[in-house]
Image (cartoon, rainbow, N blue to C red; front, side):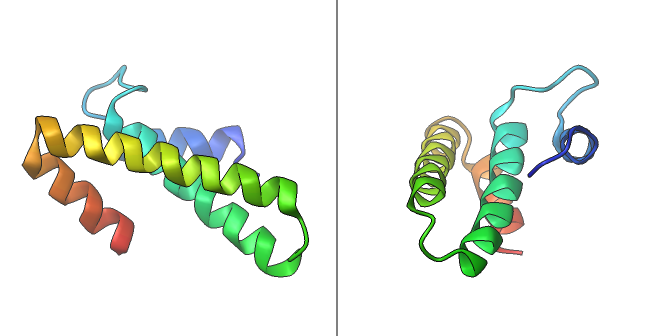
Length: 86
């Protein structure tokens, strides 16, 4: 589970300005961290289909944010894709 402190650190690393909590970059970063943690959980608990459904929804949400960035600003999109793959 993503604690408040971890989430704050992710936001600080990815925010565009001091009060930024909702930009696509921040949302993608938070979703990516949640996806990673849930994927680790599902490796242990293979039959947890309720969590698997949540994972699929988060992946779809992240993909939607990436498509938005691709439409609006290609350079920002490329940076986010590189961060996800790293």
